[in-house]
Image 1 (cartoon, rainbow over the protein chains, first blue to last red):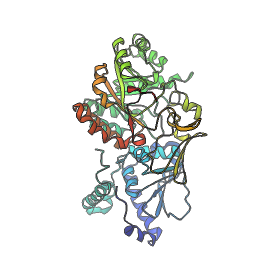
Image 2: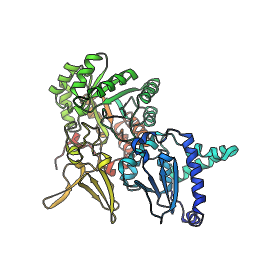
Image 3: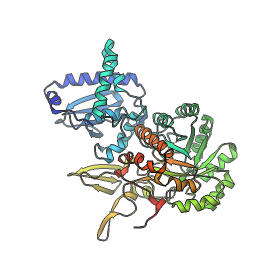
Image 4: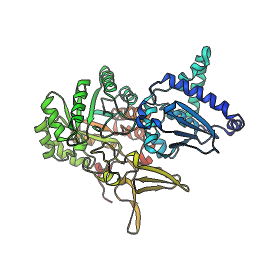
Length: 169
Length: 325
């Protein structure tokens, strides 16, 4: 699986956080609209905070399902989360789409989970039960250019995953 | 031989059906189900839709109600059985004799399978369940050798289903109290073995340490494949040695013994893994289907693809080819 080259992640260190967060919230909202029952399976764990730390990007993402919000911070900032998952960015995105098996990645030590395991397990199962497809869900943000955007996102995904995690139908 | 495939979510269910499962087994989102993990399993409506989808594609659905009823709360299990039957389940997989009796009496036409959780592992026990509750199939525990299975097959009056791939429980299922001892919760009564609520993983230097309740289960040095935090696969210090007392963190794979299982009279091959993601289900079912339909000499190459997805990234034939250490 491809890592994000440092050349591409370095600018993230200088782009204002508020800009990154706004873009992320736009995408997060788009996914929520496309999958309205996404967090139903969390049950009592809906009130918790879930951190996702891409190992190849200097940012941390915290998802708060109860308020349907995503927060972005620099990795240097203190993190307030109940459970934390760390993996390369493309792997985290593949997990979001259910294209990889989280247990297998955990066994191979490509992914690590700390904190409230029950909450993170519920989140994994909720995401896996959904039919998120970023190339379709996010492409709609491009309005009339949605078909083109979908193809571009799909191509980036295929290259990033290297054909190793595109199993589901 | 039939291929019986797992599904923990409707998405995984669709994957299993599309990948060629002959039957998919699943359960409700409650304590009636021995895979009662957070975020997993089916609502009544989801089960109904899944069964309809499977039926259109010629695939059967087995519903697991395979925990033991709590005294005074039997109605939860009775309702589970009634709802699964109303949804159109082709078979119920049951462990509790009381629930078997209830189903046999109230729904005599309903096909009943004996869950591995019932721990029926000899001809007398199995034939008792066949004669008393009209059980049509028994899922055998993973503690028997193939020779044991062949001997049992000659003496029983129902079909045999055996686990051939996936998580390896090395204990007498339905009787094991290790999880209960460590956490107060068990697959038998609560539907969870080593529940995530009691699991912690922490980094200690470069090591990954797994803990279950008050017990340290394992310490994985950097680069070593990790496993689930179950006591039966923990690393123990015994006298002067340190190692795996019961079993390594490893998964089951006995597809290399398919011909022997067939000769032993096995009629259905079960894949473990309702707690796994849809990508795992899709890949494993696809490969297993191809393996079942391939000549023996081609199976090894096909199945080697699955090793990286297995616990500890290793597989074993376990008790099926018992070799004592």
